[in-house]
Each structure stands twice: as structure tokens, then as C-alpha cells.
Image (cartoon, rainbow over all chains, first blue to last red; front, side):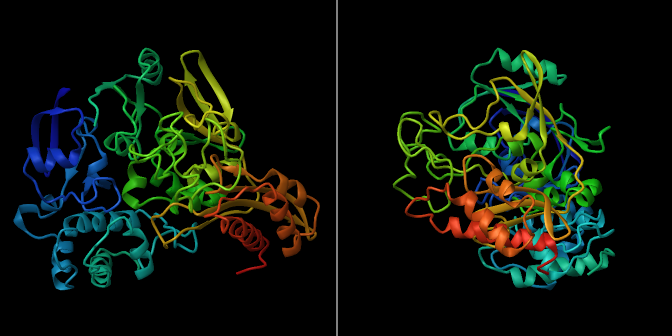
Length: 174
Length: 331
């Protein structure tokens, strides 16, 4: 059933008529031709479709486009403001944190979310002291917090330092 | 995916009224489970009433010293809430051990409680499943059931079902004696969380005691002054459902168990309150021997299947270890 919506993506508003069944991922890729978020499993298990919704990382394959409302959608493309790569884009290249690159836009959006969550002091399942005032992003913390993003090339060993570099530069404890 | 109408309501009462007139409709929270089940053809609502932003997204202090959790509070926010981290560590740990960061950002408190089983026969419409298609049988009973229930299953008859309830959060809330606030077509009611989820009995299609059109609006946590913790055992270190989990709280006075709460996850069609073990522990010495005897007493009722017998000793050992940790007997 068709519904009229306006999606706010990477700083621009896009009026669209979508079938209610359309996911945010499909709206981005098939209607707006923003192919930066990828369709991997389409079931919220691989993280390739990760985008930021009002700054928080979510699986866009499980979000119905009709539910997005006025929320600001940021894709990996949108993190490159003015065509300038985001620090995470640079660190993924510098650390050789991918091979095929298919999961990378999702990894980058997820990492951006991880760093913001750590700055907000959120703990994780491997945080020893739940009541600590601020969060540390040790390698173990990064691995746990990034577990919603699979990399079938298994570039994890380089993804962890790529995230760590930017976390450190952002003032997050390591 | 089946076509559906999308309906937004202005407040919870309007959402309840809307769904009351739609027998094949469903409430939509974060969608992390429902949208997936719709893609799989397992859930086929013809109307979705979006309640994600209708119910409260706040955690508020209750007059009794407890907390009221709005039904719309995302799992991530609840886990990060400082009051939860300090006073209800079992709940924060359960939330943090569940799903992924992306899913926790989107999933709501009510949706987490009401998520469906991850039994592979339930989620595959080509297989028999009494939960999805009553009367079709249970594929797991003689199929793949390594991850399935060892307590309280229905092993024959039309209700046959060996599925588990997948929520970690619910297991912690059961140990905390939470109370679920519900708004329905006939008004509001409170459900002790131990009475929310049900065993399959003779109707595996019903996960809970909620009636059609009833909307979870909040979950109340009573005050908790005992140390508590959650321990989850799974096949990989992160982002996997529990094989077995334990939510426990323990108060020891003069070496004796003064009070204890114990609930198990991954072992039954509902979060399993280990009331037998609790009864066996109160007034007993807080020792490994007491903990093991209590766990054995609880698990004496287990009816494991050929492929999941490992869960019985696993549950026993996780109970013992978790209680020992709460006594400070294990680092």
C-alpha cells in the first residue's frame, strides 16, 4: 500500500511514495540510489546495512521507511561531508581494514556509533565496572561493541586498530 | 512480505482502540523482530499500529524506590541508565549480553519482552511448527533441537513445542519480580512478569498471557538491595542467543542465605523462575555444596531431548558459579 513520506538523508530531504513494506535500506538503495549501505543478510545479523538514525547506529534493513518520520539518516556517504573523507574512512584505508569492501560502509557507520556511545559513557558486555564514570575503548571493548558487523574477508585484525585510532583521536580512553 | 496498512495513533489509548478493531493487526515497536518475521512470512499482520514513539521512552524513579521503565525505552538506553547499572546490574548485564549495538539502539523494552522464539522450525514456513501453524506438528522434537528447551516443554499432543523464549532482559526482570503494566480495550491491568510468559501447554501459538489488543505501556522494577548478576553461556563470545543463562541475586548473612532470586534463560518456553532452588537455598549455608544441591533440586524436573541433554549440567554449573561469584567466593 503506497504511502507518501519524506526521507531526510545525508542533509537532503527526499519526498517519496513508497509501499509500506519498503525498508529504509531498500528506499536508500533502490529509490534514492544511495548504494553506500549494503544488503548482506537482510535480517539484522550482518550489519552491512548500518546507518545512523538521528546519530544512532541501526540496521536499516529492519527499519520500515514509513516509520522514519523526521529522523535524520546518515549513511557512510554522508559522513564524508563536502566530499572530504571522514577520519574513519581514512583510518580504514590507512590500516588496510578491508579486502572486498562490501561490509565497510556499515563498519564505518557502526564505528562512528561506537565512538559516540563510548563518549556518552555507555558500558558493554565486557566492561568490568558497570558503574565506571566513562568508557574505555580497549581492543576487547571494540571487538565486543562491533560484533554486530560481520566481515567475511575477516579483516577484523585491522578493523580494530582502525576504530581505535579514531577513538583515541576523539579523546576516548584506550 | 504480505501487504499491510501502516497506522500511526496519537496516544496509547487510541492505538489500543485501533488494534481492537483489527483482529489480524499488530503493534509495531522497534521492529527488529517483527519486521524480520514479516519478511520470512512468519508474521502476516494486515495492519501495523506504530507504537514505538507513543509509549514512554523515559526511565523514572518510582515512589517505592524502584524504577518505572517506559515501554518505548530502547534496550541500549536502559542498559546505559546509571540507576539500572548501579542498582540492577543483573538487568544491565542481561541487556548488554543481548543482540548487537545496532539492534539494542532500535529494540524497545516492550518489544524485547514480546519477541518470538528463534526456533529454526518456527522461522521456516516450509517446516511443521505448532507455534506458527497450530496442528502442523513440531519439527524440532525429532529434528535439530540442540538449542531448545529442557524444562516445561509439551512433548506430545497438539501443543507439542520445545522452543525457548529468547529474551535475556526478561530473565533478569523475572528475577527482579518486575511488574508489567498493560493497557487493553477493557482498561489497564498489572501483570507480575512471572505470569506474562507461559509454557506451551496445549496451545504453543501463545507466547504470553496478553490478550489481543493489549499494549505494554511500562515495566515496574521494585526496589532491589541485593547484589545481582547475569551470566550467559553461548556458542560465541558475542551476538548470539543463550544456550543457558542465569539471573541471580543473593544476600548472605552470617554465612547463611538470607534471600535469593534465581531465574534461568534458554531452558524453557518462558523465563524459568527457579523457585524450587530458591526454596532449597533460604536458610542454608552459602556454600558450593548448597548451591549445587539447590540447582540439582530445580533441574530434577528437566526432560531433556536426545540433542540437548548438555543443558542440564550446564545450567547446574552456571547456577553454582553465578551464586559463588555473588558470595565473593570466585573472582
